[in-house]
Length: 471
Ligand code: CS2
Image 1 (cartoon, rainbow, N blue to C red):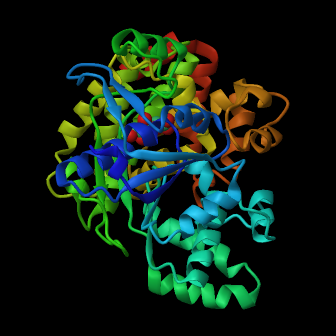
Image 2 (cartoon, rainbow, N blue to C red; image 1 turned 45 degrees about the vertical axis):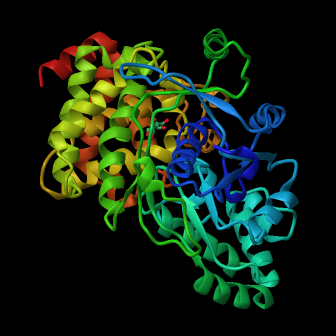
């Protein structure tokens, strides 16, 4: 690619390993295929400046190292034209979003980055950072940055723009639209009225489904890339060979030809997202919590435990699949088998701790959806309940300071001093940010949780394995 001809067209919020191994690769491939060089990416880090500090001295270049069967050779990706620490330069972030050249704002900020109430899917106006952004400081939340950027676009007549959410959330486009509108509505009336009208005319929020397993890069990964590449790349990322992107084709100001890079454009993103969340992500979380309680460091070690593999497969086939409508062309059983093979990739080193992090943000969307669907169909959500019980055990067994979860303090405040099945299960069922009251009051579900929690508590991982194998 003629890098000196590359123009910035995309601002990306959340420049973590995932964005580099997914969005940046698709975008580079699309530009390589079509020769359209208007989609260079200005990447913005959210909470930490590390990635910006790594990328800037390398002119935004970084290596993607695929790991596992079918891995391609090392590849240097050049679609990122600038990297900004959002924490340190919030005004610059707003300016870049407002720049007339910017036509798409993409986001990979993880579930917690959206700052929303999962029960109402509305912006959490009680969040101190949201409040501070609303009060007019240079914005630090992603939604604040987007809306302040849009506000500046509206004032300057910088033209329409697309906001493209790429996180594992159902209807992520609609959600982002709701949150952005929620932020704009909470501004003083003199600002919110014209801004909302402008947004309705000029901004679209398509939904997407993204998929690629990208663990956090370790020092050992950097060393091995250095041996292969002959150069030290501080911003290298490792990823599985598989990658997928399904996108709703509703763009306000053009887009790269991502289809030339293998992306699928469809009106049925919701079905793809439900399949991915309830099959892949749900069993990923299940393996993380089962693995953590059995002392397994990686997802591939966890799925190698026969009983855990069985539990995942049964949850997917017996509970998740029957409770969703698959998108046309997707074979459910093949999808599940492929997911389990991807988890087994021993070269990836995806840790159970990482996948198990932020459980309060994930359990509801990945597992409780299937619990509800299975109960509604008059069946017993035995396997999804096992995953939820393993999460509860992880929360209760990890000191608040060590629990990697934005709601760690609140979860621990809800827990009783004496931690046993009979006390932990009702306490966490009553934790409203995760469990809807209607589900919390379901006796069948509570009994399943108590059953699994007691087995974990008294019989340990081996006893749990026997119980799973016995059906
Ligand atoms: C994982 C996901 O960390 C997690 O919660 O389940 O990041 C998963 O690796 C990706 O969604 C795969 O596409």
